[in-house]
Structures are given as structure tokens and as C-alpha cells.
Image (tube, rainbow, N blue to C red; front, side, top):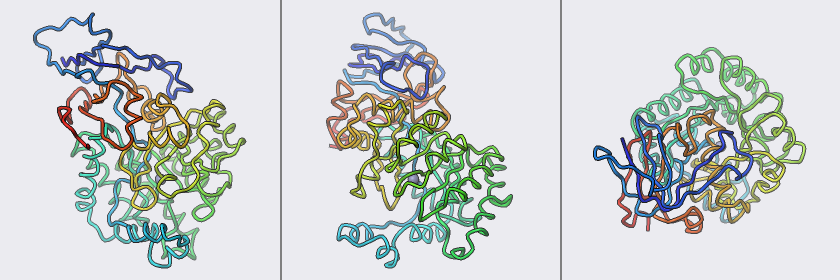
Length: 417
Ligand SMILES: [Zn+2]
């Protein structure tokens, strides 16, 4: 039995609804305790009411705030190579076409991933995940999409699956072969889509249990609505839950397609319109917001306030990738959502926990502190949620507990200062 005492502010979600539409279900208990048994939260309340038996393992929270483990539900954490050259070109004002001509863009990463072995992909991702854990992230979704071939896609997803066995963060796999059309198929789009939906590739992903979701980059420069529908429905037929990269650069109806195919989330949404918001809301699709990406690219953020006020539940993720969001820190993305999207700290916490868990089909088990939920908890070195969001860019995480076990602890001594 693990007992956490001396919690300055314990944040619980009293509602079992996931995703949460607003902050009404969020409750704070000051001077609180939590007890954990067999990986589950079994009791919580005011510290004064806590009965501590002598065989309990006790963790002193030191007056820090305790929040649910964060869920980064949209990442591209498995990759090889870096693209700082492209980063500088963008600062200098070069266009997307110029960057691509100079060898930049997603195809650079595809080349690096194809050249890397599965072992190398695992070795490159492990320290990234260790840093994410240190930021309080206890569940991470990882997409394929830089292999764009049978070998490349399976290698990425097998690496992601192994990562789940090698370190404490729970890993969720997503099949994203429809990320872009690889160069060798550039004049044979149909043939590439045939491959994406084939027994050899999509079938193997399902047979080996490498992914739970099928994702498509639906965009004028990537895949059309019809092409996306074909891939998502083929995935659905094989048991892969649809999700989309939608409405990022241009508005071609991707959020409406997300509603039509019953996607669990549609992510990006920088150019979503009223019709898209209504369609997603009616179909129960979570609005996935990636504030780190627009921040990194220096472009307009998605209209988060409009979505929340319209009653569309939103979730927050890093979109961590080597091109458009080289941002591992979900708390930093939450801070960006506060300052640039005008989401409150409470809305950001819900977005990065309960709603993020709902976006990857784990709403009943992860993303909330409540009796019976899996004990994924983060002890902060600050006394309340607002102070955490207020301290932009500093790692305020002291201790991380995954499934009832302390998996990261820095004794509150200056981590990330
Ligand atoms: Zn993405």
C-alpha cells in the first residue's frame, strides 16, 4: 500500500464522463492524501482524516500539488535524424517549396528512418521518453508515418511496441502510413493507397497488434477527402479506430470527414470552421489541439476558445516530431494553450489528462484522480495548478507515479532549473 501525504492541492475529476465538456467536474482538496493499492487509487481525502497504518509506504508530497499523469495522445516520437537546417531556413523566411528543394521536409526524416535499424529507432526514442516522463507524462501515443513502405512502417511500429516494454510510459501505437506519398510513388498515388490498405502492410499491423488506431494526414498537399475516407474505412474494417490530422493548413472538410467515419479524435484544427465544430460535436469526436506545433511554426493557433464555448471537448498534445514541433514537453504546450489560446489552467489540465485519455480510448482507466482509477499521478514542486502553468518552461515535476509505482523522483531539488 502506497500513501501520499501532505499534498498541498489534490486535483480530482468527480465526473466519470470522459471527455469532459467543461471544468464543472474538477474539485480541489487542500491538505490531502491518496492511498494506492495494486496500481489503483483506493482512497483519498483530507489529510486530517488519513489513517496511516505502519506497513504503508509513505511518500511526503511536501505541500506540492498532485495531478493525474499526463497523456500525450498525439506524437511522432519514433524517428531518426534531425532537421535544424530547415529550422534556420524557416527563420530566414524561405518558403515550404524552397525548404523541400534544399532536401528538407518530411522526406528527409523518411530517408533517415529507412536507413535506421529497429534497434537504432528504439535507442533514439528511449531518452526522449525518459525526458517526457520527467515532465509528468505517463502515457504516449506514437505514430508510424516516416517509413512509408512495408519494412519502414512495420519497423517503426515494432520499435514503438518494444518501447512500451522497456520503460515505464504506456505506449499506444497508431498506423500512419498515409502521412505523405513517398517519392517512388509520386506518380502512382492509387498504387500507394493500395499498399497502405493491403494485407501485407495494414493486415500485418493488425495481426501483430502493432496499432490501435489508423491515422491520415488529410490536407491539400497530402491526402484528399476521398483518399482519406478509403484508408480510414479500410482500417476500421480491420478493427483500427479512425483518427485524423485535420484542418491544419487548409479547410477541405477533414473535420467533417472525422465525424462521418466516427473518428475518436481529429487533431490540429487550426482552420476548423463552424460546420466542422458542429459535425464533430454531434458525432462525439474529440478536438485534438497541438499548440506546440503552431507555436514552433509561428502561425495562428486553432480557435480553442470557440470550440470549448461551443461545447466541443478538446484535448492537448505535443505533436512532438522532428520538423514542425520539436517540443517534448507537454506542460510547455499547456502553458502555450494558456497564453496563446486563452484556455484556463484547469481547462489545460483536463485537456492533457481526462480528454487526452478519451482521445485514445482510455477514458475509463486513465487521466483522472478518482477512487478506482489507475494510479498514474504526478507530484509537483509547486502548491497549486495555476503556479505550475504560470512558471513557463521550468520543469515543476518532482515525482511521477505510474500504475502505483514511483518511476521518477528528483526529491524536489532543482530539476530543470
Ligand atoms: Zn502529427
